[in-house]
Amino acid sequence: MRVYPIASVPAETYAGIDGVSIRWAIGENVAAPNFYLRVIDVEQGAATAWHQHNWEHEVYVLAGEGAARDAHGETPLEPGSCAYIAPNEPHAFVNTGAEPLRFVCVIPKPKG
Image (tube, rainbow, N blue to C red; front, side):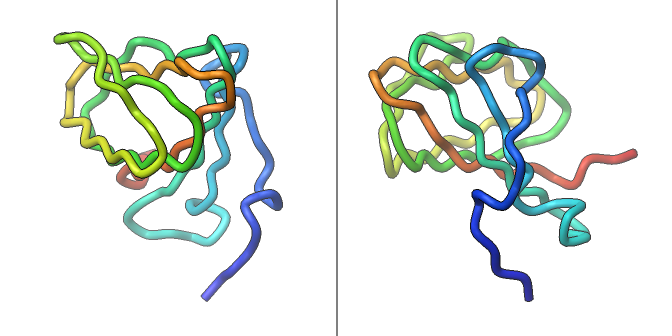
């Protein structure tokens, strides 16, 4: 078992987007064999890129206010919100509030 504070995991710029950072909280650092857990911060006025990929992922909002954007529009997010993004579903996350939007995102272990 490994227990450690999220602050001990360095934040990286997410996909080269200003105002969006990612911490690979559980992954290669603990040799996780199946799933990776990431913590993503989206600063006020920022958003992740509109994108899609071949795998599903699950999101749980920890702090802030935002929206999950898909082909049908935007759905509000707040602490305690969950979101399921199906494989190949175009999506983005937008901070609509005054504080950072922080969420946990779980994905299958990247192949490579």
